[in-house]
Image 1 (cartoon, rainbow, N blue to C red):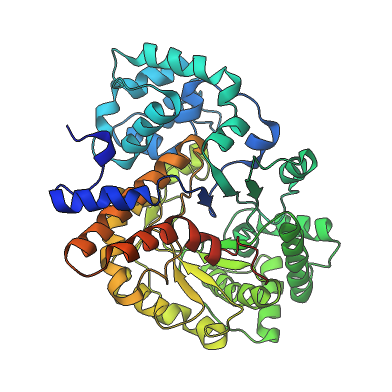
Image 2: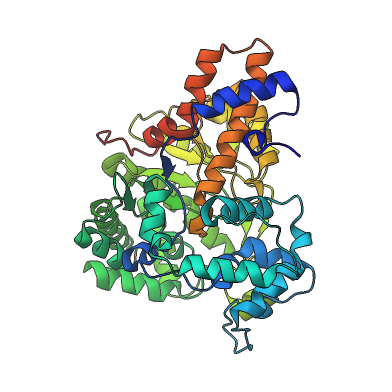
Length: 475
């Protein structure tokens, strides 16, 4: 057995000893979570967490996806349906089903994160299986009933300095308003929002026209015209900035950008309001809107995050039964060099713009993303995301991008999670992987130990604060 202190460190002894030393420089640094999907109401209401199944299973599409792949339908795991399908409601029954199938998660990051949460948050070290299911369930349920395990108490215990949530422009931000009214962000910490306009720029998304109308009502702008639509979005960006936002997030199918002249953009927008657009029109509109959002960022300073490359709702049966974001999405090949050129030709060297690029396509790390980040002042590389957020994915990222982009054209780790209790586990994994990578550079004589120590602290803490403008930098 590997000692817990050496978890995820290199097996080679010299590198392992160096990794231990480097990890100590990052281990206790506050957590910066600049991109994630924790519901702000969780902290605004500060209610006790529900039963263990509804904390660890029902909302976690990493978990439900794996079980579905082995023939266990999400309805048996308590995932809400939208088509009237009967859904299991008993938490203990759901938990027993997870425990009986826990072997399916061997070697996966889901098992790694979950077992770290059991041990480090709840003090439970025994392995999960069918025999221990009820005992672990009861232990977790007892902890969740204690005041020290409410969301705000855990926020403080986790040493979170900044937690960014993600909301649509038509969200009323009431949870953030409640947090502000309470004067709460945790001792030394704060909760901020992120501007995520996908459901207003994706014409293919059912209900687009209705959401545009809601945007008009919320802002008092005439969204019947394209200039009015842009003005409404600018107004909501300002409201988000007032609620603490420092970034926007864009989850487009591709990285395509297109520059339309004002007349053509207006024609396309009117066509969409009339219901006459097709898939090609929708892609052009999304691509043009990325350029529009970059232009807005020059004025208001929001950092742009671009998350392309997911074929959403690929599993149509799953989508029809349970809706969006329940594990039915699949990565696809993504092209960046030509796709981003229209935007970069206009704004790529403007120091006011900051764009963080992510990918689900590892083949682009060396060929496209690292050279792009090394060639434009506005570009940074985001951490491995979603299907790549794993010890091996994090290692491959460092190995493939560092030689071309260096460390300081990356943005530090983002946990990108809905699972609040897993945040410290995910950050710890990233810090351990970086310690191992830097230890190899030190052992090979490629980096002095003191510089490696400075670098791991930057990757864990200082870089995400700087890149996401969380350090009070003037915009």
